Figure (cartoon, helix red, strand yellow):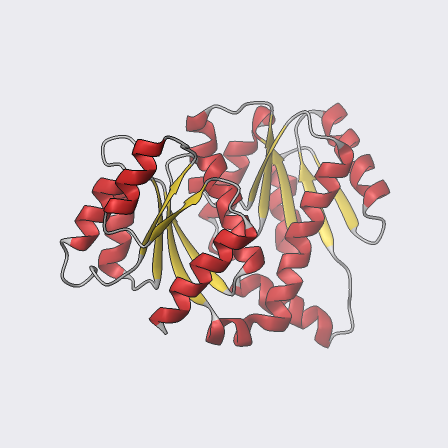
Length: 275
């Protein structure tokens, strides 16, 4: 986000308020339809429609683009790869659209650093809302980055379900002053813990190979990590399952993926005890 913050601050300093969204799609019909929807729903933003990768890269070089919207069904993944290969655009917000919910595709685009994945068909109102959310998040970062950095907690979120992971992340970030570090497997989570300190761990119970309770054991067995509170996330209502969690060393459990306000308050209480 550093490049984006710099661009946004420069626009403020220069008295500019132009916000640019670039839509890239090789299918002209889909490209024009998306452009019309955004222009009608976000009249204060500049919408650029581009139908080929070369023009897209040239546009990124010449304009301060705030958000790129790609379509995985029309060369969007290749375009995303080109964007992330360029040091100048590696942190540029990108939204990916697709008619596919295939786990491998979703995992691939998130690994390349997309901020949102929109499944088609998407209602115009929903698309506009999600685009606006990404853009306003950038502006909040510009105005509050220093104070947020001082007060935020650091949470490791471990979940192999990419859609649940995204929802859990959004809920926590909207309700807590926190930095979320995401992992899609227990192995990835342990690697993160080896290199970064965290204040709390949220881990999904049902994961392949190493589930949430086994992950808890691995953390508890490590002398350097054992004091970090671990909260289990589960959608199970089975009494035996919940009893097993309560008898473990877990700090507690919450429902996933739609973590309630009371559960967020519970997580916050565990975080503040660490401070």
